[in-house]
Image (cartoon, rainbow, N blue to C red; front, side, top):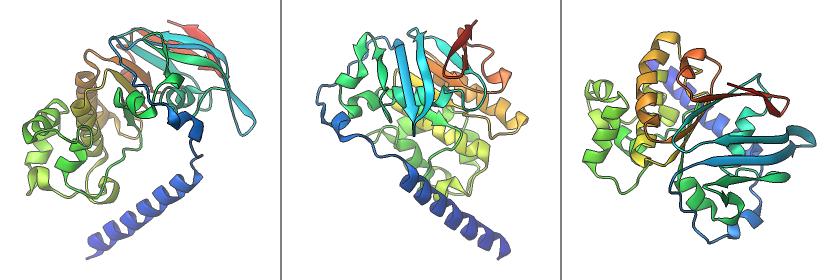
Length: 261
């Protein structure tokens, strides 16, 4: 009874936190949403050109430029607050730069519809967005018209099949608000399975394993490697183990590139 009460309390707190986060999120500018032209990505190269960005009068990015070649794994490292996550937010157009532009396959992303941009990008973050629904439905959010077989393949590639099959209801298991009934590693595997199912050409990983212990991180890293295969991948991480296979590492400091290796 106490265990069930604890789950109920955590579900309630989780729901409240998500409501407050939603209320605190700045509204997307309406002028961004009226574009109807669809972005078509053939290779997936990303170029950030002389981008400046300030939030609440605080300068976050300072004339930042960097190139993410198609099909490569690129890592961003730097102190918290250096601007790494802001770069991801600008690529997804949660915000637009104050100056400069972002190109995908030499196309200015501000000229295309938000929907077509985001259909071409998968995002996996530290805080996994899961719903009080079945595991199958949570994976299927990556591709709503996916067949059951496609969902199963994505789960297998995400190294999630074993724990799913050990659950009494398998893919039909309801996981609770934010996946509260699962472990951190299990939640991340479902998020990775969702991204695998979506199969977008561009992958953004923002501290995707930072909340996991070292053992779980090693287990999840294999599924992340499967996810990055044949994609343009941008990785933000603090742990060396998650970026050691990167093709290029950019050091971000005070909102600009301060080194490259």
